[in-house]
Length: 545
Image (tube, rainbow, N blue to C red; front, side, top):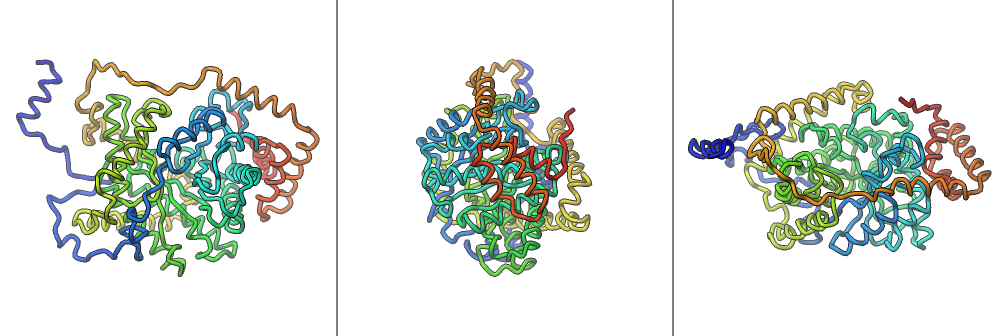
């Protein structure tokens, strides 16, 4: 008998048991739960504080939106992928932009070298946006644009002009702009959020975009505050939600300071969350999120419209539990995470594909992720009633415990001056680093089990899996196309447009930036050029190392 086989056999003879009985957030689970743990029944679904769901009939009335990542390489390649995934059952778009685009760099910028089109679509021009959405009816397909401010405002201007050229009235557009200045890159880590643009002007421009959308695009979600990227740093469910809600309060107060009433903008705020592998805790987390948000809006900010109190949550299942070892195990993990998402009552689901421990997903893996959602929706029966686990003693008790811990951490953040102060002082980053270390320690010590990593390892494993690969000349062609685009323009018009943008922002930094951005885009100015003009307007320089 080989050593690994003997270890497993000895474990069986002794009687297998879990290494501990704590959730990922450290909540100690009881042997069993009873009525004493949940003495009161929660209100019905669709009723304040929406613990059991934001709608009374939930998935009986309409299933969640199925979204998969639809961004890589060039706009032409991403357009092909969008049409392919829509034909396979995807019902909404998640358009991810590549790292240079999210940093306000054109593909031909020296700092963009090696990153163009790798983890999202390379986007720089109005024509790129038109190409990306060619053949997509923007008033019928809900689109999430995954890009951070100030660049979110630039790309929203391009999106609005694309809709106009399609003949679509912007008032009928449906979708979401991520638009979060702090969490969009790699969670709220200080360096990523401050190196390419200052924080305070970025938040100001995020609020400009929100205000503009309220005035002109009434069906559009003005911000989708990203707690998934917070969770992917390795923090707990408690930290994920406490951090994102504390940040959300900063945006709420900024909008109120502009004289905009809470009931005018709160219904258009949404959240993008992670669902990890801890099945019961993640279900309870989504329920606690809704309850806390509802009470914050009503009791703290005086919201009167029930829609202002609805915490609408889009989810992408977490990548952290996915492993490069034994990658087919990830199919099971992703299915369990997706099921938890559905039990938790999310409005939109992106099932992370099983091969993302290696690279962007292949077409085959993306289709399997869509099929996973469809099997849960149509075959398991869990969508036939709203909140099917509501009233479960353990779910209700976990919801209560998570709420208590979340509110306690949010209170600590408030006492320290609020999220932005904690972010700027790097207290948030220190908390993230501590959580990262602890999560890694638990894996190393075997306190958290990952099959194939620290249990049932196969040292002789030979992984056979198809890996997504970019075309070898993709980046070269993309860079060359942007260089040719810049040469083909009227240089004087571009220069005057950029000078006007810089001047207008410098002269009146309280003015809403969207109208001048739209004017600038029409003159064939690239997103990188506009980003540089904004940096100049705010006297900000990127220090190249």
